[in-house]
Length: 178
Image (cartoon, rainbow, N blue to C red):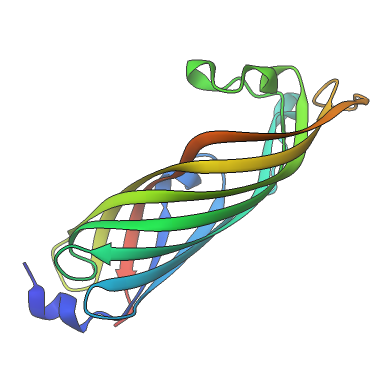
């Protein structure tokens, strides 16, 4: 669908609506490198502290190389990404028992990760818009300080941990510049 239109697309800007749902400002830019390859760069920032001092403050940057199975910006793609984040989080009860200590403690630190991604892009009617979904899994390394409470507690520890983790989860609205 729209193969001549897609062939002409060189650069796209995007925003991950899942990130927006967590009050994280975010934007990405993707540019075509060759017939099958694109380079995506995204960043996000959450500066907010919510009621009861709940926070998922962070800044994240994430470059990603993508190989498109058909043509750039159309259909399936696979790729690899790296991620860096500085975070300050606490007082949050995440679903499915993810990071249970985050409810009663505050963590501040840095995270680096590498991962593999799979995604799919759906062109919307017209020449300039699409929606893409991406999931990534990989290996991360974090160094953090742990505090007794999410508000003002004393530092109770420091640690470095490695973990297998999601490196990306996105449903993005994409606009093609040309």
